[in-house]
Amino acid sequence: MNLPVNTFKRAIQAGQQQIGLWCSLSSHVSVEVLANTGFDWLLIDTEHSPNELPMVHSQLQAAASGTAHPIVRPPWNDMVTIKRYLDIGAQTLLIPFIQTEEEARNAVSYTRYPPKGVRGYASTARASDYGRIKDYPSRYEEELCVLVQVETPSAIENIERIAAVDGIDGIFIGPGDLAASMGHIGNYKHPDVQAAVESAIDRIKACGKPAGILVGDEALAHHYARYGCTFTAVGSDVGLLARTAESLAARFKASA
Image (cartoon, rainbow, N blue to C red):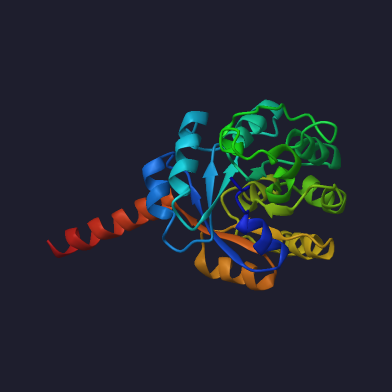
C-alpha cells in the first residue's frame, strides 16, 4: 500500500485556491453527501460541534469516497487529542487558538514522532492502513499538513514568529473570534475587523505561508480570496440546511 497523497497540501503549496465548506453536523452521512459536491476541502469540526472520536472516524471514512480533502479541527491544541486524530487517518489538522510561537511549536511536536516530537507510535492504526503502509513512520510527514488558527489581536501580532516555526504549513484567520476579541462580537464585517484581516493576510503572505479564512458572506469570501487567501471556506453545512430550509418554507407559506 502507498501513503495517500495529500492533495490539499500540494495545492496550497502551489498557490492554488482551495474552496472549502465547514462541516458541523457531526454526521458521516452529511460528509458523504458533501464529499462529491465540488468543494476542494471539508472541515470536520470538533471545537464547536458535538463531534467525538468515533464519529470523526466515520466521517473520515465517508470522505474517502469523495474528491474533497477532509481537514479535522481538534477542540484544542492538545497532544492526546491530536495523536488520536492522526491515528484514525487525518492528514490535515487545523489547530485552534494558537497565540504564540511556543504554542505553534507544541502543535507541530504533537504531530511528529520522536525525536522531532512527542506523537505516540501505533503500528496498526488506520493512518498506516492498519500496518500495510510499511514505510509510514518514515514518510508520513510528506503528506501531513499542519494549519494553525490565529483569532485574536495578540495572535496576529505574533504572526511572523508563528509562521517561522518549522512544520507550520498554513495560517488560518478566525474572523468571528477576532471580531469578538476586538469588541465587535457577531460583526466580522466591521471595518476595523476587515482591516485587521487584510493586514493579517498581507503578513502571512509576506512570510511565504498560505493564508486561510472562513466567511459565510459570499461577497466578502470572494474579496478575501482575491485579496490573497489560498484556502477559503465559504459556508457551512448547518448554514446551508437552516437557511435553505427557512427559505423554502417561507416561499410556500407566502403562496398558501
